[in-house]
Image (cartoon, rainbow, N blue to C red; front, side, top):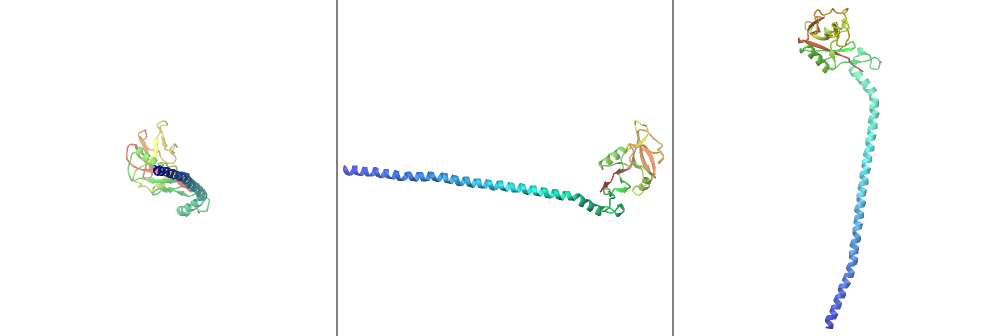
Length: 227
């Protein structure tokens, strides 16, 4: 029995010693967890700081680029103005370095005086012709002086009829231009036929009238671009 008891006592002591040795190991493992947590937290914070720094640097770069572009745009009007005049303006309209104004018309439009003119090859009614000119940011032809009629010979077929911006005012019962200016009979003879159903046109260097529903060619007119 003593051997057995002695053995039992030794066995219990051995278990106790093992338990004591295991306790520091558990404490050491528990101590390692906070350390890894701290390392991970520090690494995360470092990455966040880098991202914030990168965003700030990007914003500053964009602001600097915006200021640079703004400075270039500030000098562009003078340079662009000079370049456009040198490339697009004819010498007859003045030197690019002078103070004279250069007048430009869109492609297929013709410059005369202070106006641009365009003639159609299609045919439409007066109202349809008026709408077409409006789409082109212009209005039907308004003749203010006889010299314009002479110029029109260069861009239209004289024997054909072209709608002009002339109509009979419902209120005034007389011929008026689309610009609301009155028809000057000292320049041109007033059309023979008149009435709300009649509109003005040009043919053979004269101003004539016809029913507004008739289909003819037309001439559009607008202001030039000034540079």
